[in-house]
Amino acid sequence: MKNWKETKDISAEKIRQKLKSRIQKHLSQGKDKLILLERRIVDEKRRPKLKADFEQAKITLAKLKDRFKRYEEKAVQYVETNPKKALALATSAGILAGAFWTASRKK
Image 1 (tube, one colour):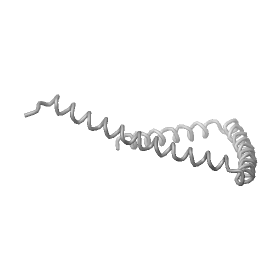
Image 2 (cartoon, rainbow, N blue to C red):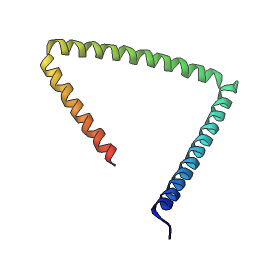
Image 3 (cartoon, helix red, strand yellow):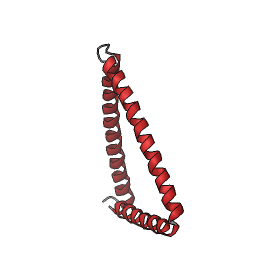
Image 4 (cartoon, rainbow, N blue to C red):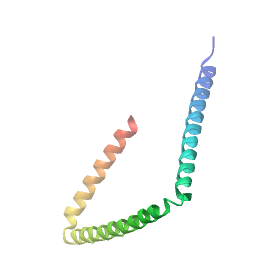
């Protein structure tokens, strides 16, 4: 009959092996995806489309940054004009986020 320590060591080893196999699987998948991406980038036919997509992504990012800046300014203005409401909202949001985080950690 195995004692508790031996049983614990066996289960810990099984967990290590499972984690190792999962990590190796994910690394292999990542390597495959990187190779595929590299082939797409090196392919001369795809370069113009990739370049166009990259330029479009830069434009979209600039628009999103501008939108974020406007919302940030509105938020600052709201906080300055309604400090008590802003504090209440921030407190409520913090409590709600903490509750969700705590609930997700228990699962």
